[in-house]
Length: 266
Image (cartoon, rainbow, N blue to C red; front, top):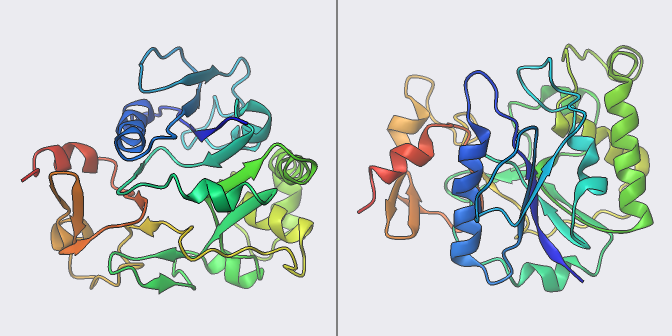
């Protein structure tokens, strides 16, 4: 039964997501024995850091700057029996091999809420007003486990329906939604609610959450710059943000951070 990590990596005019993917894959392999990786992209990539490269023949995000419209294909594209889906702008900070012993008992496990740099739980993100208006579950697509199962396929089929009918969804289902294109977090949250409206199947592992390095999540004063104020550094393989050692997957948001960290290794 194969297991591994997969994510989507589509470059746009401002960000090289394939290069960010190298940083993520390197961190996975440096901390984990079970470290198979798969990226989904729109151009051929040859790099030993990636065990599988899936090049899409039909890129449904070709005309988009923020390329998210292919992500409902995760289930059908994953080469693994057991998959942890991530986002390219992440970095691992510790071993997660033991996660599989818990995760593969389930058809799918979502990451609810997130953590800030102090490892404090953030349940009502100031960036998620749409979620609160529509009473959507606070799930994040950047950390999602699924196994090859009927239930997981049903979830991704819902994601496909939502994505392909976005204009109807945003105007007739969601309240006060102004997103021009479907963002994966919203698609996941709505599909989750449709599949499990009473959240009877909710599995909320406290360790299955990532650190989200955004200004308001970190409660950084508006007068300060999040990156300069918290000043992430690496001491050998240990990542510190705001003086706090990071023990979770870090969703760093600032796409320049990998290069900045390389210049700050002590």
